[in-house]
Each structure stands twice: as structure tokens, then as C-alpha cells.
Length: 249
Image (cartoon, rainbow, N blue to C red; front, side):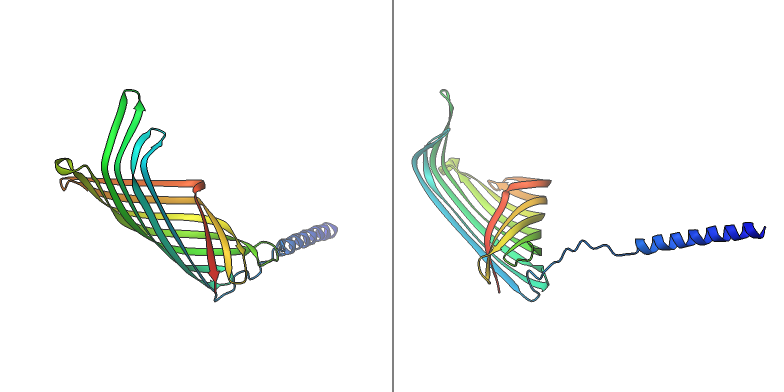
């Protein structure tokens, strides 16, 4: 019996030692040796602005199914941005954008076939929209360099605007007035390249987003219509690619 007890005691001691060794190995920290340098240091301000303007005039212009197209149009947009780096490689701030577009169409023929033709004349449209976007950014350097890096941007946008559309002249004049509200949530990763110590070229593309918009229109001060739209996507949106230059102060 004494021999049996000693054997059982030795077996239990071996089991306890094996379990203790396994736990000690399991508690060891595993490191992938990924080192993150201070790509954008704490306390740095990030500022930028983009301005775009385009104008076109047509006189008896023809394009695909449009003939005798006469009119003019212009588009203007300005978008300043300001962020603050509250921690190394982490920044938060906002962007404001304002856009205005006007189109004046004197005449145009829509030709769908030899016996199908529509005429549009005296069409006037003007709209302006404003958006405010809250931004959160996380930066990551590519290797040990401070010139090339990755940026992941989370966006929360609210905006609205007004538009007017008038068609015809005299007794045949008709018009529609619209007010709209929109909300967008999105994620836009990208890359940036520092041109010097204070300016960088940035390229972002939207990959994840949720959009909601509400529009109220009044036609001829009589007819009232409401439109609600919402959408969500999880894909690379090539139409949301943005290029810009930011200044790091």
C-alpha cells in the first residue's frame, strides 16, 4: 500500500508540474515585432482647402441624342478642412463644403428616332448645397519612413440645400422649389505622400457607407411631394475617390 501511495503521489506531482509549465508558456507574451513610429506627432494641426470651378457654353451643339443644344452652365465648390492631432497618429476635426450650380438651357431637341423627337426650351435651374463633416483619422507609416503612409478616415456628414427649376415662358411657365436634407456615414482609407515637411498629397476612396436623404418639393405652389431615400454599401466606390493637398503645421 505504501508503494502504491508513493506511485500515485509521484504521478500527481508530475501532472501538477506539467500543468504549471503549460500555463507559464501560455502566459508568455507573443509579439509580432510591429513597430509604429510617430508618423504624425501629437499637437500638429492639419489644414487644407479645395476649390473647383467649371463653366461651359453651347451654341447649336450636338451630342448623341441631343441636337441644337444652346445654353450655359457653371459649377462652383469650396471645401476647407481643419484637424488636430490629439495623440500620435490620431487626429480629429471637421470639413465644411459649399457648392453652387446653375444651368440655363435656351433650347434643345431630343431625337430618339426618325419619328420620335422632343423639344425642350427655356429651362432654368439653380441650386446650392452645404455639408458639414466630422472627421476622425488614424495614420500609419509604411515601414520606417515618414514620407509615405496610410490613413483611415471615418466620416459623419450632415447637409442640406435648396434648388429651383423653372420651365417655359408666359402662361406655360411652371416651376418647382425643393429643400433637401442628407446624412452620410462612411469609411475612406487612403494613402498620402509628403511633398515636403509641411505639405502632403492625399488620395482617399470610400469602401463603406450609409446614406440617407429627404427631399420636399413644391410645384407651382400647389403640388407638394416628399421623397426619402436610403442606401448602404460595402464595396470600393470608384466615384468617391478624392484627391487633395493638406498642410501639416
